[in-house]
Image 1 (tube, rainbow over the protein chains, first blue to last red):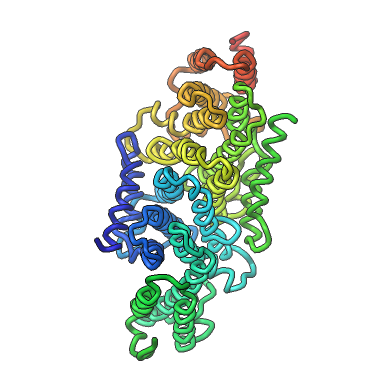
Image 2 (image 1 turned 60 degrees about the vertical axis):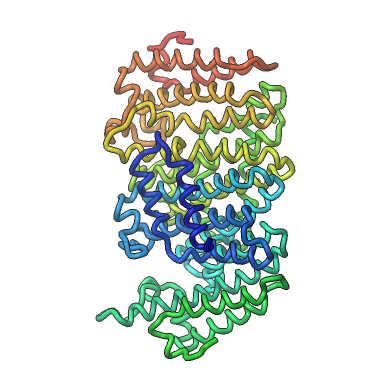
Length: 292
Length: 292
């Protein structure tokens, strides 16, 4: 079965454990809306890809981590979309959770998803007790204080911020957790794989900045993207479009070079290259040429 | 050392582990503001009291659970105070987190505290791996779906609600977790102790309803009469003040009768009686007479 199908099934199963009779109906709907339909499920796919590269494509511990990481990612999107942050009306082409269910249920759905992520880890790793603490800490570090995505989002509330700290915490940390957790699940080198995730996370952030500029360029009367509007640090704003594409290229190459020795090293490198093509905005693909 | 002093120190230590250089300064301040100065720390005291009643007043696992439960309680207060819920300007006599730091940092501080609660459990129970899954599940159940405090708060967004479901999830669940976790930490009967917590939680809810009607704004540190204002189910509204006092009395008696056999049974009963006196609003104490 394709990894993406297994991920969708595992996410659905994790949610259905807690959405049972007795659960407030609208909160249950808001939670489902936050998770399905999903995006590209990049982080859980990455986690499973690491386990597969190390020879354990079916690792249950890697799947437990993948599910927890995706639930935390979904929670962060719900809260980031709130009126007090991005006030985003849409997410993945549908109304954002607060637009569909109201702000109270959006706050609660995010909270419930954070809790469910850790609860799921406890349930799924109950038969591997020694893995529980390191796995939980690997994942909690990527979302909490001082350098997880919660901290990353909070840099927007500081008078001064180092762009690198902001991006690494807000975007990079869950990618780092995805590769580190995949490695941890199968007994591979956590630090070495974490570094790969760090590079990939940085690459995604640059691609995201590029998408923000490329998308807004198409919109009439809106010369700048949301990042610029919100005065957020952006690689595209800082380096220009061509500079950002060059930065994306070198990050992907660095990620590939950082892949530790493992049975699936070559295949993992191919996955990264394909992913790099996928995340580059179509409008910029021609400009980039055969860029990698 | 008094339990309350040990709790304050353990909470401070848990927070300082993650508030380190590199953490966004204002989020760090918001998190501290959410936890200090605290209220009566009822839930962690209860958790430690169960461990003490079972002969282990210094149980590190009970303290780990007590800290996690209080962090989750503080998180729920921060989010409940948000403009989209209670829009409370005050908490414990000081500006609520969103009033002091703005709404974005209040959302993030709540998120960070939820994450920290589970992270703390992982760290503090790392040397007792077999306890980790059951402890994590005991606590996550009390805050998540389908019947934890997140669900409890969500009942306010449903067109219809059973008062009992609402109160049990919104208030009772963390009390149940406090006694159950205390019992779990020392190998005592989790279900039996959970029932004691269930009764105590119900008693606190009634006392809270009474305070809402009776107390002055100064004494409570938050606006009064909000339940009626927000059209929330309330024992005082339903049973009248005298009826609610009678209900409080019988719940405390039921809690005392439910205490399992243990070395500190009598002392635990005294603690409950004293606590029942403490939580009854002063204005009503005379009306209640020697009520228990």
